[in-house]
Amino acid sequence: MIALGCDHGGYRLKEIIKNYLDKNKIQYKDFGSFSEESVDYPEIAINVSEEVAKGNYDKGILCCGTGVGVSIASNKVKGIRAALVGDCFTAKATREHNDSNVLCLGGRVIGEELALMIVDTWLRTEFIGKHHTKRLEQIAKYEK
Ligand code: RB5
Image (cartoon, rainbow, N blue to C red):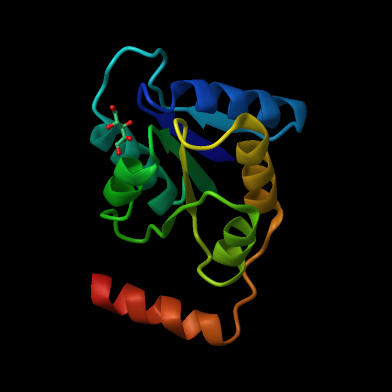
């Protein structure tokens, strides 16, 4: 189950992603925003990220204009490993190596087809563990 969120800059991309999730029968909850009216991204990004950190959702996807604002806010939530992604290599690597649990995308930066390839790659790729685990443990230790 995926938790989705956006601000006005990411609204259109979030709607495109919802269409992809519907087509692929992937369940999600949309935490807003629900229009292109200007809103502040931190509250939405933190809300989605807390839901993921609590284990209520498997992963989160956040969109804002650049993806940067939501990624900064999301990474403040303990247990979140948010990745701002703009290419398919990184989409795969950040799941395999970082076990990223929130994907951040820039609605004003990347086109629809690339965004959907990134989402598809990110959702289908598993963490490979091994020596990467200890690195994530080091981050978790710092968080405490
Ligand atoms: C909103 O104008 C814009 O600042 C926001 O969507 C995002 O890009 C922030 O990082």
